[in-house]
Length: 85
Image 1 (cartoon, rainbow, N blue to C red):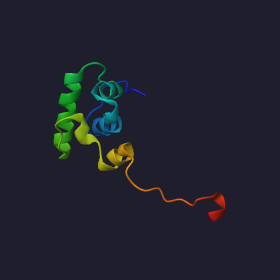
Image 2: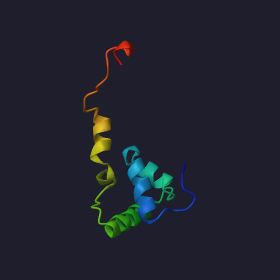
Image 3: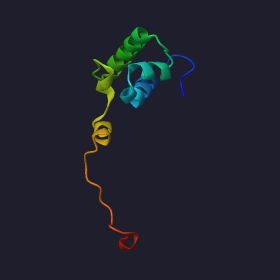
Image 4: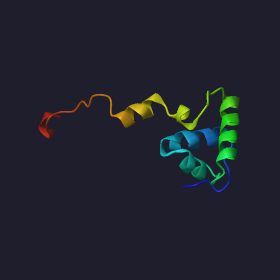
């Protein structure tokens, strides 16, 4: 659900991080900036800077855990059948 007003600070960073994989346009819209990508990037850069988070582009906010889920790395550990639970 898109924010009704442009988000600021921690809320903006959290929203942008949660939607970073969907692209800048989608993240900007969901964070309440609509099609104003320049303002979105500027506000996000300021918010990250005040929090001490390195930010050059939206993909910088994607965590290693999110990347691993996307790539599908890791091993699934599960029993072969329900009777082996």
